[in-house]
Image 1 (spheres, rainbow, N blue to C red):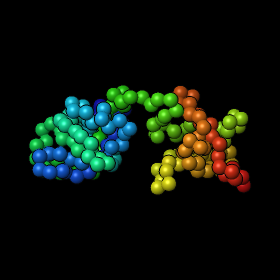
Image 2: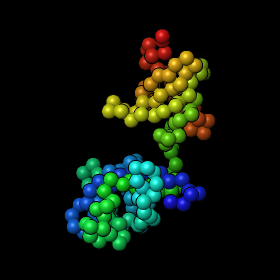
Image 3: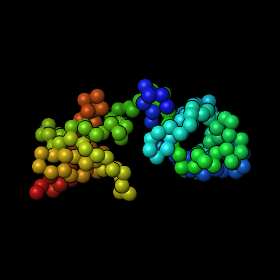
Image 4: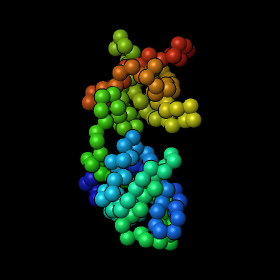
Length: 176
């Protein structure tokens, strides 16, 4: 990956499918039809976030149950792609549609100011956790930190440009 372009992870490669170079892919995007379109160049990224290979072009793709099947140009046999199992796909962020309305990329939430509807400041987002119960944000307040579910019933307003959230925490969360 070039050092001057920010890349976003958009999927995780699972396992080969069949004998002709197809791989199953778990999408990490809301727009897999566009992101995995034939002709798009992607980078293969390891767990350390470093590029392992790329760019490689997507030759074909299609929805497959909850996943996608993709084939890359030049990967004609199962042996060509078996080493890619478990790697991530990344694309330059400027090639993706920007978040709309109150949407944000999860990595952007760190440092967002958190306040109540009456503008009382509560703290700053210090971490984001993807738990079985859903997405949680950790807020560092003036006296302690707390976890808040990142759901519409609690996160009422998001200002991506201003980097702040308006929240209505569950009753009792801020006490003590």
